[in-house]
Picture (cartoon, rainbow over the protein chains, first blue to last red):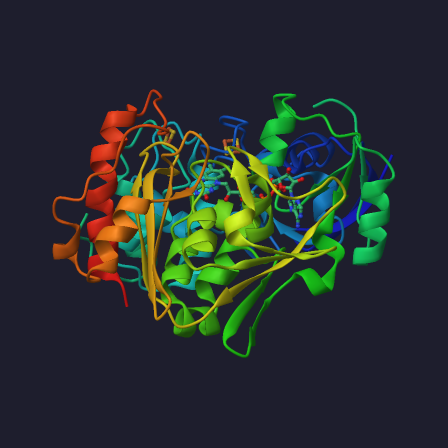
Length: 156
Length: 265
Ligand SMILES: Cc1cc2nc3c(=O)[nH]c(=O)nc-3n(C[C@H](O)[C@H](O)[C@H](O)COP(=O)(O)OP(=O)(O)OC[C@H]3O[C@@H](n4cnc5c(N)ncnc54)[C@H](O)[C@@H]3O)c2cc1C
Ligand code: FES
Ligand code: FES
């Protein structure tokens, strides 16, 4: 069984896991970090998005062994304690969630989007969210949240 | 998922050796195609040879009048690379339009070109730009590399090291995407050089990516949108699936080709 070690939300972790363990399974079942969700398990929905070495990826389509040696950030690691990250606060303000199932993946996707493009246009926001599916909100309030988080006027 | 083994060699030589150890072994790149395929047990490799530890497979370099892209370079890195954007903007734009941001952060050019999905984007660029596939054993010209749907000239145990794209074509890629998957329903890459015009069509061929003789003939008379007026693409050999019939694709291809020609620079 491969031995893996990685940094998750700033903490060093290591474990023996079978090679067929998905990163999302390792996070949820071994580390009990259940904020990362599985919506589809077929790479379509983005509920499982986490950051590996600073880039948003789908943890249902990544093996835990592929992240061996990497630095992983999940929704739990974005802000300490009861504090909210700017993007989380903007989601709250814009009412950008209903059931909340897609939200951890959305927030992680948006944090990466804004890192690469701090002032995205509405079109760029909608393209940037193309890997994340929400079956509740109709996306408008999520787009608003991204505009608020990036300090821009709300047009959505 | 079923049980399998995994290794991450640090050198190309070790990867080739690990791959050659059994016909059941398969290279792993970004995993964006292979992992979903394994979940469905449509592929069941015994050992995955992860290419992520091999430094020489990553990155973009300018080599004389060409851009050489390492097999393990992600779509996001190609889309954002300054040399690619300056020398072959159509290629950077194509990479930036693949799937979604998360797929682009994981998926690689080598994985895409090795897989040769009939709806993938990169094969159209490779074929239209007359690129060369550099493998662990030889160099394969684009015209003899794509041999059918999900089929290539790669032999068992042969790995793609890099892809060399000549610079200098006036080119563009236009994609009419299938809204749910964002794969190409019809994608057309046009490239105009001193040596002539090449038009590659993806998303449409029953045998995968192909060059369109009627569109190339029309554009050879003049590389303009007007030259395409009246051009007819036959529906024989085109895909019919839930997204569109062969006849539908045949009528959409010239329209997408016009958009590509209009955008070429
Ligand atoms: C939701 C989603 C949307 C997508 N949308 C698009 C799209 O719009 N357009 C598009 O073109 N693609 C799309 N893709 C596919 C994506 O581009 C994949 O990244 C790509 O097809 C495979 O690349 P990979 O690096 O992930 O390869 P992997 O999945 O790791 O490997 C694919 C195959 O290539 C082999 N292989 C990998 N590297 C090498 C190498 N160096 N030498 C020899 N063989 C090798 C593997 O053994 C495997 O058989 C999408 C994928 C997903 C999940
Ligand atoms: S659970 Fe990973 S993309 Fe849906
Ligand atoms: S809030 Fe329910 S899926 Fe997005």
